[in-house]
Length: 405
Image 1 (cartoon, rainbow, N blue to C red):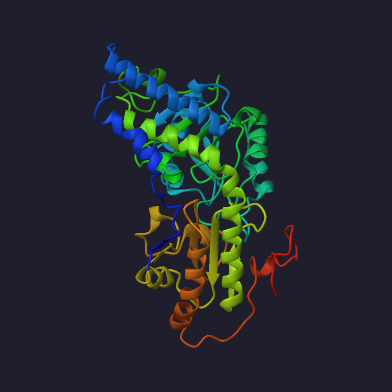
Image 2 (image 1 turned 30 degrees about the horizontal axis):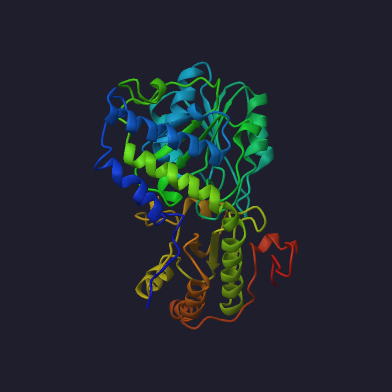
């Protein structure tokens, strides 16, 4: 039986067009983009083309606002460390309690090694940021705010446009880790107050080991990696031309398919969620029912350890996860779900444009007996959408109900 891959928030399959775009830069067009001969000029042109492709995808104003990096982690680190350097009189950082480890780990390190104070803004049971706590933490001491565009585990989308405006009023720089959001939701950065944005190729059907940092025109920036004059003196080191060319094509395809992500993929996601809620008792959806990535379903299962279900699904040929792939080696429950005060085991299903109806059918066939096996003899109970203290009855458009009781 064909394997079912529903762990696209961990990584995506590289699109065949992306592979074909990359191959010449391993063989015939292998020159160094900094070289002045024709081989170098060909590679240089490919790097510049990719910059334009990324500019179009995220709605940047200028192509040179794009700095190519090794991925999301480097981009996150570069943004935060640069802000502390260009604003040395400001020694505070403001993040959410549910940031990716690329941000959380760096900030914890900075607390221990520098005179830096980190404010971790809490979230509610649906993973939504506490805006009152956010406003209260902003002050002239804050150098940078780093709040993710969308959470990698629950898909909850944060109001980064509004958050950036508030940060600007306090004189702080605003960065967003948009690794999970780029290519899944429309973006127009030139109409926002966002100063910096991180993205990663392997989350949008591009190769691993390549990413980018958007730095808005006029925003001061200090390079984290010292070396040559590459990337307009903002990131030393010979450019990864095959990876950059692949990322550019991935961005072009993502722009083409962004409507598919917000319609067809979302419809598949909703069908999966509704099917699970109907077939499996004592289940619920983690995350904001309205402001959520169209591809992400984080399902909570009462009386279940979350990591047991993905293991049994994997044996049945279905790939999903119990949380972020970057924390899968930990025996502790997800820091995201702990911050949301979610006590039950949860499973993340994350879809992409590769998925179809047959994938959903397979999960709905295999999952219920697996949960029953894990639970033993579960007592029947109502399924619901959202967490128990948020059954407000708010509904989305159409016939679906956000909270089932």
